[in-house]
Structures are given as structure tokens and as C-alpha cells.
Image (cartoon, rainbow, N blue to C red; front, side):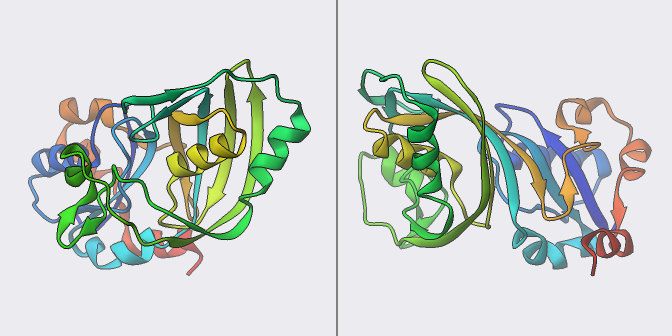
Length: 234
């Protein structure tokens, strides 16, 4: 049971929910995950099992690819659709050039300020707990990188996009900042992690089926450590 299990996380499940279910199904305690997905988000969640937890940090350092939907005209306290709406604005009719320029501003290397609603700790306390108490504290900017982006589809107040980014990147902050630059505000409506390094959500085991899956069947989906090394090109 040493290896990596690729899961397609369902919406409204936490990453910890998935870990807890896999622990019960497989009957092991040593299960970790490579990068939290918010409850709103779906897609690739890489679980490390047994000795696979020793390469967890290595796998977490890989670049990520996401597809998502930006909702224009509303700013929320969490920067996504699950938060409380703080501001609403009329959404002007943007031409493609204006929209592209707003996205292109965040190509390459830059510093990003993490959202208050996040698991980052300030003096040992997660920021989301401080946010729930109505507190806003200064956050250390993080150096991040966007390798590529693509605007997939535009609607009156929504934009579907794809982004390839470094670890530690907050897509909801990316969307929030672009909304600020467009002067109408925005928040993340939906998000799906498509890839992490060379691992893809295609073929990943659906999290919704975990509870009714036999132990032997799930074990058959575990990638051994040599397989993981080969797939990473190491």
C-alpha cells in the first residue's frame, strides 16, 4: 500500500473528507494529500499512502493546471462563490482585447497576497478562523508564477478560463485581482484541478464512489512508487 492514489474530488467535499474515507476503506492510517482543494473545487487530488507520504512534499511542488469560471460584478469575502457578497457592480460590455489585457497582466512572475479565508497560519492560528472572528491581518505576499492562461468562453457576466501556475497559487485571488483591474469586481464561481505535474484528472477515481468501493478494487488503483517515479520522468 505504498504509493499514490489519484482521486477526482467532488464538490462540497473537503480534502480531509477524502483522506478520511480512503483511510477507512483501506484500513490504514498513513494517508496524506498533495495540496488542498477548497470544498467548492473539484478535480485531481493526489493521495499518498504508506511510504508514499515521504515524497508528498516533492509531489506538492509540481506546477498545477486549473479550469474555472469567473463571475463578474460581485466581490465576496472569501473570493469565491461560497463567501458573503461585499460589493456588487454593473458589468460593462468588455471587448476581447480589454479582457485579454487584464489576464495578461498576471502572466509570468509576481507576488500574490493570500486571501484571509485560507489555511495559512498567523502566529499558529489559521487565517480562516481569524476571518470568522471578523479580523483582518496583514499577510505576507507570496512569489508565484503563471506559465500560461487561456480565455475559453465569455458570457455577459462570466468568463471560463484555464491557467497553469506554480504551487501555492490561489486561483480565487487571481480572479479577484483581475476583477479589481476590470473595475467591476469578480469572484471564483467554479474551479477544477486538471493536472498536477504530469498527473492528470483523466482516469482518476471518482471520490463519490469511494464509500461503496471494495478495498481490493481501490488497492488496484494505487500507483506504486516506481510507477510514480516513471510517470514523473525521474
